[in-house]
Image (cartoon, rainbow, N blue to C red; front, side):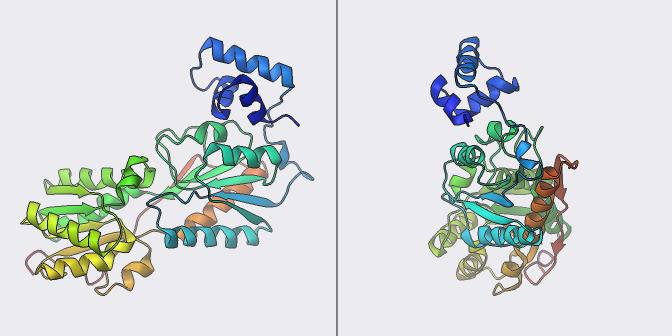
Length: 335
């Protein structure tokens, strides 16, 4: 069986370029398109529009593409993986984990070898290099995350933009006028990871709407990083009274770091977070938070993919509304 990677190798281009040339969904130079078409004719390539989903041709395996890149918080990724495996087993499917940061090549190998019937894709970037291959139809897919242009894709995620707004709205209702976002590690933003970028959009939009003074700072993991960012915020924003954290490992270290600088939570500083509920509830000061619903997202992704494999209609993008749970870490300003 001729694979899309064989065509790409013969034409001297990437698999995504082959997909673009065949689908016409992106502009490709005439010379490149002719080269791809010649390779298709020479090799006798035929795109698989989803025939693997027909009865009798399924492997009963779903792939989970979750590249372990720098800045990824492994415990949260593990929660997503467990939820996908649990939901897949309930649907009589096994799960094949793809953890290399190889992008389209890894997914292409799964499509070419038919090791899995479909793939669930995580760590989605706004301009994700895997998207052309996913749009080609060679392997049915569901994304946990929403790229900049989700047309032609099936996506599910927490509405991170609304989550950022919800945290700031809560602090503004409590009277806080100077707020900061302590965000994900810098490399997460450099990759233009969708969920992190959208949360920043929501944070800044709500801060501007309430006319708050605000700042956004990416931050690495660890107590040294927490101490450094706390010192920077106190130095640059001496009137700071509200903080939003989007970096799970920093919740307790940040509380400690601010207290060492003489700021108690919530007496002097109200702190909110976007993180899994157990992280927020078990913090030294239980943290007001918007939960990241990993179990629901994983289950929904499996449900959508199984529907696609059965030929049933699915929505393009599903965004779960954020829910904020108040705990002991927030209080009215100056209370």
